[in-house]
Image 1: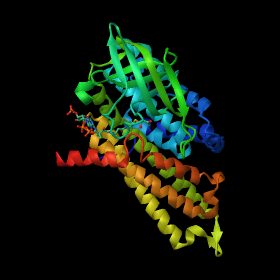
Image 2: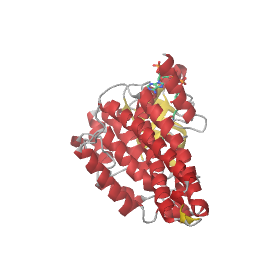
Image 3: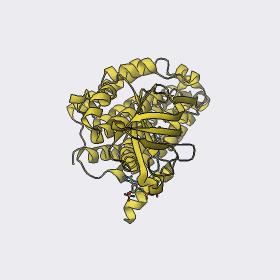
Image 4: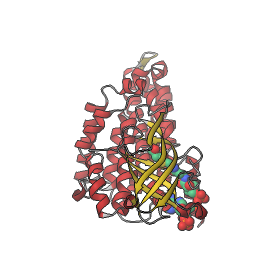
Length: 379
Ligand code: CAA
């Protein structure tokens, strides 16, 4: 067993850390307040190769391993989880499946643009009545000769208004339930495709989350990924990897809040000494550091299993379940360490606390992760 990061992984960590501090930190409070998407910053992330990290270089990707991706996600999420979710969705939920299951023509046309960060992608599974219960898709895709007509509504779609390429799940045969779900590549601007309401959220306020409305959207048959009926398996397999991305995001949010609390505890004095010299604060810091380290081991192991070509579905669910709960508890404690200062925006920890909550919800709630884990244990 080797816990040491490689030279390449360390270089990725340093580059991501530097980028987060120099490019994401300035303006992060304002972007959160104004619910402003970090457009320029995400563009630079593309130029630096953060949006297609694991894709084969022949499709403009970085050809890196999943551990490097988890490390980069952690570093960016320490500062700006709104930027890092755009990265996570593009890498894990859009590029990964296209590379694994797309045709060569789909990869040349779409993956090359997505992996280079020239355009952003979105993953459109959730619906008003199909969140955790993802098999209950109401969106339909009706085959008409050489194309399909898509009708329906998708909800809470990350990169909703900033994406150009959307992976849309729809029922092609409702009588077959989840085995009748298919997945299609839909381009922004196609007739009948409208970006709907923007959500006003508790956290990750810079991430643009929208509903999407499809009315008789004509999608060429060659834009279906895989066979008809493959969509649900495609979604589940994609989410197994996506959960490593969100687990890394949760880890980063926790680590970012902890680093701020640690630094503050050395500066702030009460009762004649820095608060880090009070045992009440020392114990909080010790618990935070231990939880973060345990979360990091679960996250890296899930990523490593994926890199080894092993089954990683339950490992990614465990990593996401644990890291997201650590993100919540560590950020709450980081606010507490900061006292009154922690409750105001200037000190960043209240934002991290709000951002942490979504990691227990999206890409499968904590309850869904427990379903995935318990099914594996009981199988
Ligand atoms: N990996 C691979 N396959 C899986 C799987 C997994 N983790 N979980 C289920 N499957 C397969 C099953 O093997 C089964 O296949 P067969 O029919 O061929 O046997 C099929 O999927 C259906 O599974 P179940 O019978 O278990 O279906 P279910 O309805 O009882 O449970 C579920 C399925 C696990 C609860 C699933 O609906 C689920 O994961 N829900 C959560 C959805 C989710 O994570 N949504 C996130 C939206 S995307 C997002 O948040 C992106 C963003 O913006 C950041």
